[in-house]
Image (tube, rainbow, N blue to C red; front, side, top):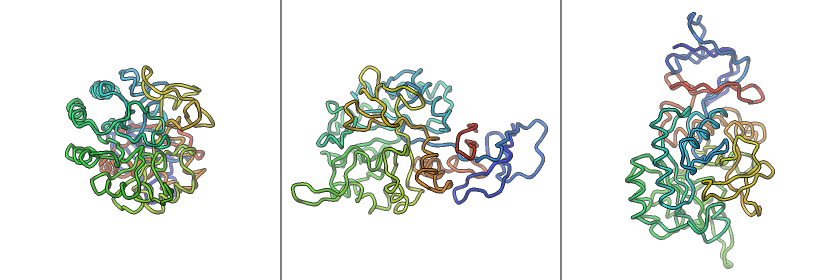
Length: 391
């Protein structure tokens, strides 16, 4: 099978092409990024019409979309959510859980495995992300939209049972590093090939530094539900943000919807860390990709009521954001047009950086010969025209 994408401006990691060119795809792999020859008669021809060709987006953190949440724990919900995000350019996706009971978390894992085994997913599924339940409830700002009555300290019997059900399908597990036995939690995660990440935490800078020393090496939705410089009982303390900036081994993810993170904060993260260590995520929940005005974050049965307000999901009392309603193509436009991030750097945040964090950059995440042809075509307004899935 041969495909030629003609009349496009490819977006590479180091630059956006200044000249129109063609990309040659053979058997789902990129064979040439500056194709000059005549395509075979049986080749599929895709005319980008002077638009951009970017690598398919990779979403590290997403709860649902299209009216469904992965915590609904049905094959139909997984299909709806993944199809929705594929339509908006996401070609690799990591389904994300919420703080929940052990039974609900195990059900989530089992349905994920069944859905992946079914072979009907349009997106590449490389594993799941556990957001909770070992979070801080000390401060409502740290808890965010996570259910306070289900927050708990690391429970190693519970962890053992969940890992048995997961059978290697958990890529990342978030926790608050200041909780009792968080060091042992990180040790167990690393032994099982799971990335321990900091999230929904009230940690001081000192506690965060210790957490990073113990093996935590990623911060979930940076700037949101994590601590910063503050005064506590007349003592000035640093937080997770400052500790993460000081540690070159720590990677970050930021919600790219234009609501969760101010422009200056995102630009600062890029300046300090570099684009290869800063992933853009949606943190999208069931309302993403819809015009619904309300719904539940988490399962329909046990989830948290959420409304949309001014382009973002919030708790009904407006006390906290509650995930986002973004898709990755919205993040693309926000980062480039509103936050003035160069297009090639924006592409790294949406594709290259998450591919590196997942350890799959050798096959996806950039436009390069030999890589899988997971690609999106967008016009000059960065509205998606076509999503191409290689293999």
